[in-house]
Structure formats: C-alpha cells, structure tokens
Image (cartoon, rainbow, N blue to C red; front, side, top):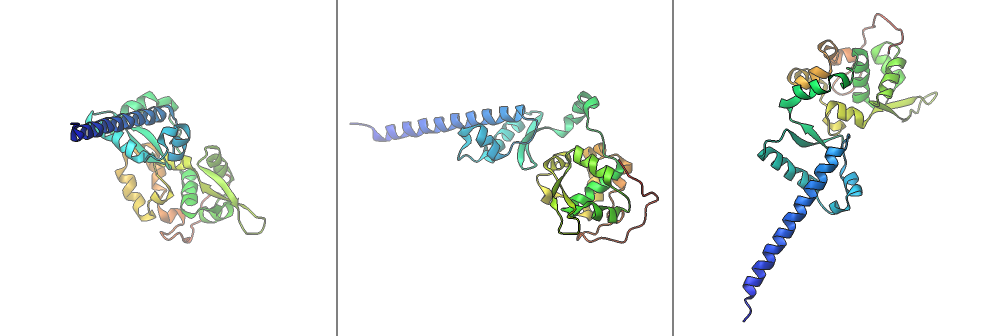
Length: 239
C-alpha cells in the first residue's frame, strides 16, 4: 500500500526548498544589480533587466536582504529613494566613506542657489519671474547652475504673456536630499528642527547656508503663499 501521506509531505518539502532556492536567487540578482548601479533602480527597471522578478514583490526581496544584512552586521542596507532602490552605507561608517571620496565630493550649494532651489521645491512649477519676485534679485545665473547640476528641470511653459518656462525639481534633487518623493519634503516650520538633528545635511550644506533656509527669508509661508519681501542689497546676476 502506498503511503500517500508520506509522499505528500515529501512533495511539500521539495516545494518549500524550491521556493527558498528561488528566493535566494532573486536576492542575489537584486543585490548585484544594486551594487552595479550608480542610481536608484525602480521596480519597473529591475523587472525590465531581470524577467525573473515578473509578478514578484520586489520590496519583499529587498526587506529579506535587509534582514540578512542586519543579522550579519553588514555595513550597508537597501533604501528607497527617488522612487527606486539603492544601497547605502550605514551612517556610522560615513567618516570612512567621506575620507575615501573627499576630493570627489559634490560641491556644496551656495546660499543663493539653495534659496532658489527651496523656492522651486515648495512652489513648483514656478517661473523665473516668480522666483525673482520672492528673492528680489536676478536669478538667471542661479537657474543655469541648478539646471547644469540637474537639480531642477524645465517642466513646460506658463499660461502668461511670453509663455515663460516653469521649473520643477528632479529625481537628482530627491537623491541629493535623500527623499523618496516630493511628498517627503518637510513642512517649512519643520526645517530648523530637521537641520539641527541631521548631521549629514549639515555636512552637505554649511551652517551659514542653512540659516538662510528660514521661511521668512525665502518669502514663503507654510501654505505656499508669499510673504512681503525685504529688498536685498544687490540686484546683480548671481552664479
């Protein structure tokens, strides 16, 4: 007489092993893709490169890898940023990474560029004229700088005389500030607290620059309306 119960258990065990092997293989593929990529990889991009991920919840695979990394004390983990997955070193190892890339570190944003970028981020899409109304100075040079660094991009034209360009932030902006998407942008009243608590942000944007993020200086209120401006001492082009 055939022991159907034993056969069933054997099949279940084989199925379980196959599933574990498949999961491990997906983890290996995801890990190597993230190691090789210099930018965040979206779920669609991962599936495009590796058809094995079709119908698979990639977040589950990433979470599984992070559990392994945490359990084995690895120096990195997978994070979601700018709508994709990317490997990040653990914060405690930042000093070593900074030493390695000291000469290659991205130059800090000037206070003028940062103020303009903040206005674009909170009021986008926004025209150059609207930015200048808030800042009180010509921003042609700053706009060119932010465009060249791919922190902002042209999002179309405004329905206004001359059809001026309107600007918005980019995925590079999200990556630069470690945001998943624009909805994670802090409310203006939270900026001071965030800056005070975030050593990495302080390192990227020097103290003098960060002080100029204050909403009253930007001419913004939390609801996105403009406050009265105090004229700046100069109206020359900025770079």
